[in-house]
Image (cartoon, rainbow, N blue to C red; front, side):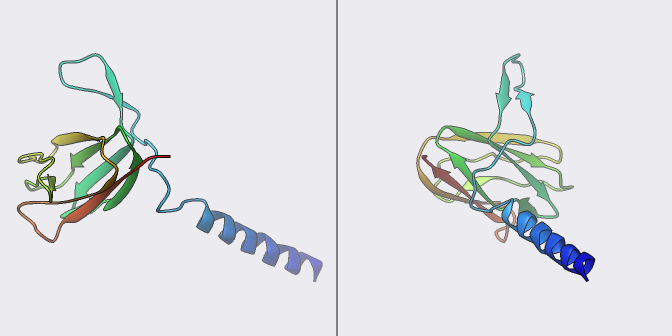
Length: 129
């Protein structure tokens, strides 16, 4: 009986730990390491990376600190754009395999979409600490 209770408690703690370990509203962490800009030897460490695949921005919502940069990677087989609703940034046409980056210096939500696929939307939440 003690072993059964121990297993139940261990399983409950595991579920609690994994469900609380990643909060969608937490700040994005770099998962791509430094990337060298074309023609430059200076590495850029992005605050977040967004993948474009199957006509979806993943993740569709990212929270970063002011002065943070995001790298979008078109891993799809079609052309897409990353276009701010307020016109503050626009990638132009991103061919398959192409990338686009933007740095955010203004606090607030920055909603964006793909010009060719209006259902593709995302938002960058830029915050201060």
